[in-house]
Length: 221
Image (tube, rainbow, N blue to C red; front, side, top):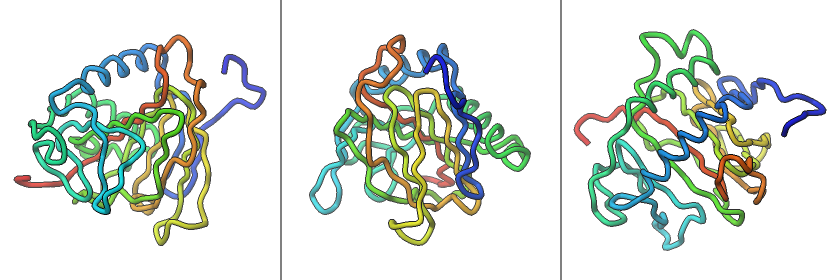
């Protein structure tokens, strides 16, 4: 919004979980969107994720570095076209380390910061949702970095014990950063709502993109 009645500011949602509004400026958002559009093209492009029970996720996804599928990682799109996954760009790793440092401070900057090597990019239209889940398929406890582009969503951040309350609903807008690590690293979280048509017009995106950066911690996958 051009003018905020109550300007948004940094907020700690839980120990280790931090929301930084407007962390990406407009130019960085445009560049990241252009990159996402390139990564979404086949081979190993944007796909619909199918769950083990036979259902499908309403968001669509493309992966970089390693390919995520329920519930593991591979070097090829094992549940799609079988192509090798696209490489993880060094610039995304640098962006992830800067995000973790800005959100979590010196602890996240130790030894150069987390060595991010996996990106999951989810595209949401106005009807898409993401159920409560944990990012627990990695072998690293490094903080997860989440970057938002496009439409505003409700991001539900819960507890580490169950998918139910207590949880906190956070409004994530285009350019917002959310980082969770430490005691919040395995908290359940999801997206119960997307507000269609709320993306900044100058961005040129219909829908929402979420770029999630993780450290896999794998050897020889």
